[in-house]
Length: 59
Image (cartoon, rainbow, N blue to C red; front, side, top):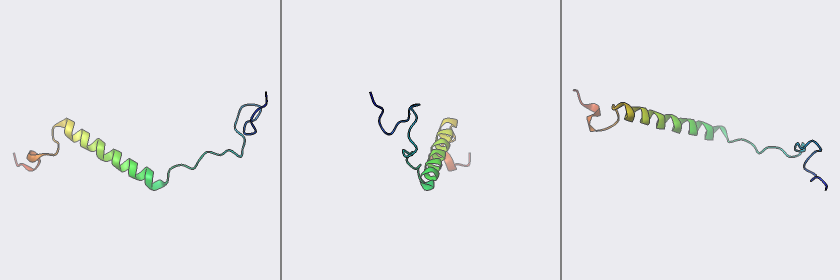
């Protein structure tokens, strides 16, 4: 049985097969900001000081 040309004898990928480029920086930053907003919302909601009609009350 013959190996495909993209594999070496030790099973590693040949050097011409590169990994695709990673996500652009703006995608990573947008994801981090969205995650931070979700975490902030969850913390506020779970602590009971969330966002609602009584948020601006002076009591």
